[in-house]
Image (cartoon, rainbow, N blue to C red; front, side, top):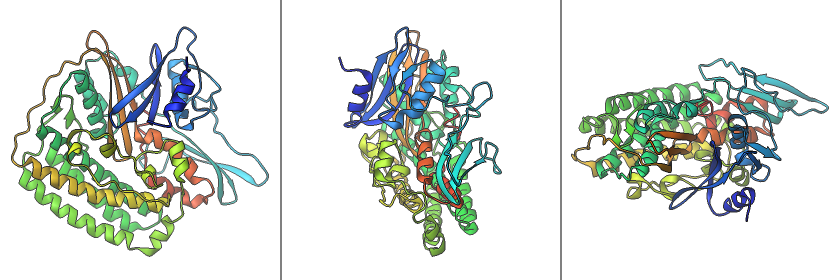
Length: 458
């Protein structure tokens, strides 16, 4: 019988790996095909011992470190045996490089801005980065454990608040998982409204990312204009769905609150925003000085991106084409597929260019969905009864693939919930992209990914 290590490695050649997690009784390695998500599961037994897959497939490194720390899975051959997040308030030592002329310096975990804690330990030879070690997990909250025992509908509000910037997409993934267990399919107007909300979230995130990338290149006007536009989108989110961060807008059984009640007003503001965003993008990408800072900074090769599990614009900026909305379409994306943006140079400019193109496509998708919706009434949220079982919700969020695994027990309560965030997948790629760059490149390379700390500290 083929072992879990060999089965997972073999599956990586045909399916898209999503990540891995453990529960009380089994370790589960998740994959995505066009037909949906599925798992290779292995019972842990009394010894709870497994051969580490991350020794062969590095993208599972964080997953297996977390399984070892939080679920007492004892891996043989785990390349990095450090705890993933702080234990008893103490973070393990960083990995550094030693050698003649090599020095180390640390940024964080407390930062000058209002971002969350993370420690970045640089090993550099002069200005050139030889190695970068990123350590998050200082504010790990244990959300997944806290969700155990709750009713699925009661947990939806907590899932929505794992992260502000990814709230709609993660709620979307969670809703899809619960709806699968309840054998429920939303009506078309609900699907269209969900698409509109998901694309609004993508728009305000990409605007923030481009603004931050401009700041990393010292283009202050690009930062302030981008953040002004982001604020306008967030105000539109509030007017459209009752919350700037779209909390509770998407929920199991439909929509968690009334949305799109003033469709003419929404359409008018959206058109004004699209006009101003396009003008901003023209100015931003027309600035030769700033573009020269983005070019060749933080190059991530296509093979490295794939091998280490990059998702979203981080993958598509390195020549990848995977986008859940078209690879395994769901909801309204089944009949309103986006044009997938991609670039090949793998640098900060490529990642920003993908976000530029996705911004334009998001506006187009919302206009098409709004037209298809017309004056159709949007059904109120249905009260669902999830049946015992396991389901996986997978969607394409602003930073890439968002996955939520849900286990429901015989009492209809949550036995296990596991969240695999796009930021969780992409953080290790930031360290790889920095290798060989100079120290002043870190802000612009980091912001070209612009990942979330809270998603890793769930």
